[in-house]
Length: 318
Image (cartoon, one colour):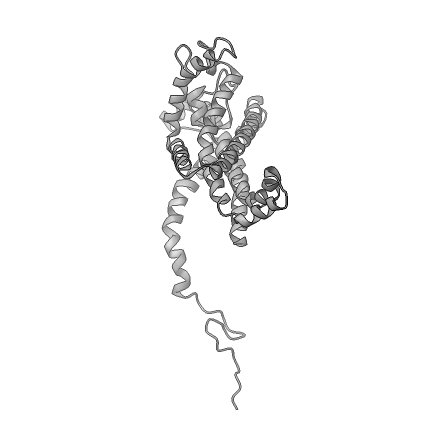
């Protein structure tokens, strides 16, 4: 009779011995993703490190030509947190982001539900229209939006005037009024965000077994009760993901605000992104602008961490 004095299974070291070196097969995944890691490090981490470095200096317009700047330590951040304009821009950013996310998700959910009720031909036309709206570059759509709401000959001004509900809006300059500027920018960004949310939620809706909703209706549940008790719990992870993504995108929006209102009138539509740009490249206080951008990056990183955690949990539940 022979007794086994050590575990002879492959990959397991005997007690008291050093673990075996990683095999070539275990290193293969890291070798395959290493080019992507290098690219991410160059295009993401390096700019953030440079941004953090500049935020601790007094880099300004003179430094752009002479290369001379001084080390200020945390003075930029001390001045920033004592600046009322920074806190106004921060509050404006949070409120505008909340309005954008609520509008985008609710309208997107409505369109997703509408897609499930349409016939094949109409649904195809509707889907193509959503994709085309989604594919339009933000700069091009912002320019078209300016034409639509142009005082004097804007199509939107003309249609609203013909409705005889809001009076004569022919010469209304939307960008020169705080609330009208916010309304026009809100409409533009929501119009661009709805296609992605609608198509994502529609894809999730098509995965719900029809037997569940059919059984609920047989039990007497109405349309709203079926949606709330059957559809909504199943769609909850997808809803959470599109909401977190919308928060990230809308918090960081810049092009639409800058091209429609330029952050005005005054600073009334300046969010953190616009405020950082104006500070760094209009006032040429580059160090101060870098500090604003780094604070914005830290806030976005916190939201992104929530997104990644939810993504990992969704993968584990599959």
